[in-house]
Length: 80
Length: 231
Image (tube, each protein chain N blue to C red):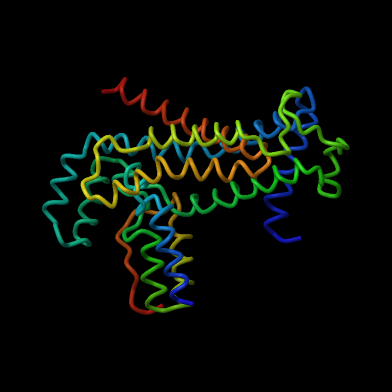
């Protein structure tokens, strides 16, 4: 299950992500996401570390990633 | 009856039929164009803002490179320094992921709405204030049948997508070969896939794709022209 989600994210990053895909890097050379690591990278690490609970944390991160929040360095913390 | 249908597909379908009723000629093609343009215009500000910030950043690039070189290898320090730099210069180049994820379902919903509209199976889907037009005329300007696949439309859709990715391609060739391979794929392979897929879909959906892509090209052209004026 974990593996499926992570490979889906990899696929997304390769072809669709404005932060990781080649067209994204061309269009947004300074990055798209306001957080670092980007939401998809965050989700990948989070799911790899904590599975389902990690996925929940990733969803919260995407909700946080809205025009009202301040850009920041926001890595995953150890506990989900 | 699921939530996706109630909050997205149904309102958009009603909008489509409303346009069909209101626009002259009872032409589903015109209604599709109207809905596409309206949705694109609503999504316009978020595209616009990020493109503008990217433009401003290009002028500050040398300084950014300096910061990156200084903190090489330490991702955390680098990110912090860059964010501080943005704050000093009062720019916010970033978009955010949430709006991006909101757009996606809208575009998927549009696809299924146009499909339903073209098939004419709209009974029971309309709100009380939208009159049911009965049978739907599925021809554009009385000439092109939109419910069937149309080779010319498929080719135009593929070609406009090719033009768009040509416009979007970076001026400077990326150094590593995987990245330039990917660019190649996007410029040449994706339009071909579009043509192949569009060939088997109702021409109304190709029409939607053409309008969307032309809109994106226009937007990009507008931004690039402004950049040249400023430089």
